[in-house]
Each structure stands twice: as structure tokens, then as C-alpha cells.
Image (cartoon, rainbow, N blue to C red; front, side, top):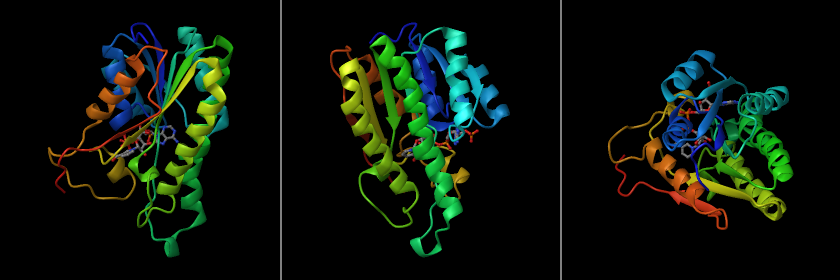
Length: 234
Ligand SMILES: NC(=O)c1ccc[n+]([C@@H]2O[C@H](COP(=O)([O-])OP(=O)(O)OC[C@H]3O[C@@H](n4cnc5c(N)ncnc54)[C@H](OP(=O)(O)O)[C@@H]3O)[C@@H](O)[C@H]2O)c1
């Protein structure tokens, strides 16, 4: 597709990977809306990116519906949904509590589903569109302390396969991108410590992968793409 003038909606576009994706899409000439819950952080990012800010929580159904209403009111169309907003909680199974577990699933699974559903309604009617789900290499295999986060990403991967089966006949490309570890605020925001150095992935590498798969001619699509650091040193 041609990104020039395309309309893209990036959830969690106020930070990290989503912000880098929003930047690469605006630089390619797309009109971009970004969402996030923290208003000040969102507005600062929107100003810097030249994007349209929509304060919304993907886990709240009314916010999801309002998000699409605001995008259509502002731009009158939608070509791309990047389902990127995500959170985590990392605890051993024996310490897992249902509140933390359900909070992760509300954003990473129910939120992704509701955003995908609203986009699919628009895209099915216009017979074309693009959904990029930002999953994780945590969705490819299990690991310690991964009960909530890893399982939520397995669910994203499963939903993506279902949407692809349902939506392909409407010319909707449903794509999954699995970043390995990326240096962002995710770790601090979710109770983890991250060792930062230049060997690790940045949001820019993920943004470059997303831009590349979107730019492929619409007759083709990349179902799934994993991105690893070449020689990460922790
Ligand atoms: N960093 C990594 O190593 C890594 C690796 C693989 C996959 N990922 C995935 O990549 C995605 C982005 O992560 P990141 O590393 O860029 O994290 P980040 O820097 O913490 O950014 C997360 C973004 O999502 C927003 N967000 C969180 N919950 C939300 C909600 N319920 N509704 C709307 N917005 C919400 C945040 O803004 P507010 O807090 O203001 O809402 C923020 O803009 C996530 O899905 C994550 O699982 C990250």
C-alpha cells in the first residue's frame, strides 16, 4: 500500500514501540491518530509527532467505540490499525492473583479484540484495510513468570490467526509482529528492571518492520514477522 495520506490508528502511540511506529508512519506521509490513557504523555507525543491524540483506554468498551468515532470524524476514513498498547505483570504462578492477571488480559486480549472488531467493521464495509497486531516473542514459547503476559500474547497470536481466516475475503491484511526485547518504558512501567545498552533493539527496528510489511503491494501480505536483536548483550 501507499502510506502517503493513508489514515493509521496506533494504540499506545505515546511511548516506546507505538511511538516509533507512529513516527515512521507520519514521516511516510500518513495521517496518524495515537491513543493512550495518560493525557499529558499522549499530548506531548502527539505534538512532537504531528499526530492526532485520542485519550482512550483500550480495555474500556466505550473508549474503544469513541476512538473510532473520533478517527472517522477527524479523517473520514481508516486504512491501518496498529494494535500495540500492552501491559504486563510478571510473577510466579504460585503468587499470581486474579486482579493482576485479569488486568493484563483486559488490555492485551479484550482490548486488542475490541479494537480489532471495530476496525474490522469499517474495513469489511470498504473491502480493504490493514490490522497489525504487536505481539511478542513471548507469544511463541512459555517462560518463567509468564503466566499472565506470555499467555496474553499467545491469545493475541491465536486471535490474529482467526481474524486472518475471517477477514482475508474482504481484502483485509491481518499481520502479526513479534518483537524480542526492545528498550522502552515497558519494563519500568510493569515492575521489571531492564539493562539498557546499544546492542538491544529500539522501537525504530520494530517500526521499520511494520512500515515494510505495510508498504508491500496489497496483493501480498506477511502473516507473521519476528524481530530479534542481532547480538544482544544483557
Ligand atoms: N518492550 C519490549 O521489550 C516488548 C517486546 C515485545 C513486545 N512488546 C509489546 O509492544 C507493545 C508496546 O510496548 P512498549 O515496550 O512500547 O511499552 P511502553 O513503552 O510501556 O508503551 C506502552 C504504550 O501503551 C499504552 N497503554 C498501555 N495500556 C493501555 C491501555 N489500556 N489503553 C491504551 N493505551 C495503553 C501506554 O500509554 P498509557 O500508559 O498512558 O496508557 C503506552 O503508550 C506492547 O504490546 C508490548 O507487550 C514490547
